[in-house]
Image (cartoon, rainbow, N blue to C red; front, side):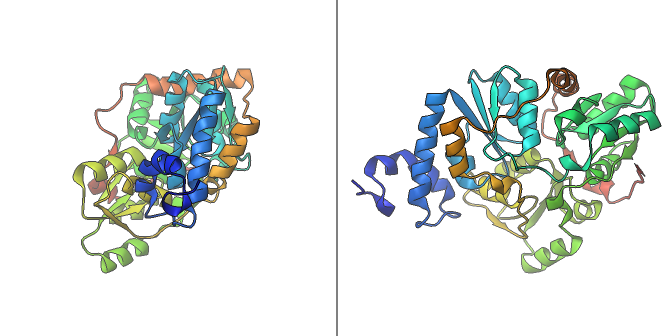
Length: 359
């Protein structure tokens, strides 16, 4: 009998109360009964299917807080999945993330709720492109951002994330005994890394369509509207965005910044849902500013996560030989000592433009 708030049963109201407290600023009371029902059903199905759900930072709050067993950036999710005893992994994210999970957990069944959930950055380069790059620059290490397909990782010497890109670049240059490296496919990440190191960078003209849309004028407008707001930017943004910001860092670094400093007002220059998800854990912080949504991430919904688990559908596979080579590149990165704190990008250095060689 529906005798709780919003027409929920008392049992369902109690079960989902903690989630509602975190999503109530982003979900209307009209939407909540159906979402609460799906959250409850998905969590039941996870137990039945021996499954875990990996929820990326860019998932909507009801997914992130409601059904995600592990939440965070793409590599962090894959590493957590590899440590899990679960038989089935459901990737609440995009296709390259599911491939990374399969590379690190080849014995597990990896599912994605919508096979069309791609990535503009990952689709900007192919394995054939990387082979041609290696022919053009023989002897230089190839460092590939984790936001790439399995076939690209298989052609790579070592992977990196936005949190450790500078560390990986400097390690690879020393390990290979060279003064420049290939860092692909994100041009803006490569340029922002180049401003933090003396190692020369050869880059590829790939971009994240979400971060590329931000402009320095967006930040100027935000400062006019909210002079007390602190501006935090992701290093997939153009250089002028980082130069105009107060802080730049990976998703983990931005999250730590907000959770530890608890600024009164914040502008996050990244995908829109990240601010919504952090807000659920820091209710006293006011998040304002431009909102660019990733259309690929938004293909993942509570409904298709539910359907994915009911039917165990949309399995993501990677050829065994590609898994072996891709895992070597990812494992090399994982084996590097982790920094004590998530990497941040030095804004002072980044104000000085550094040229990269663009392929």
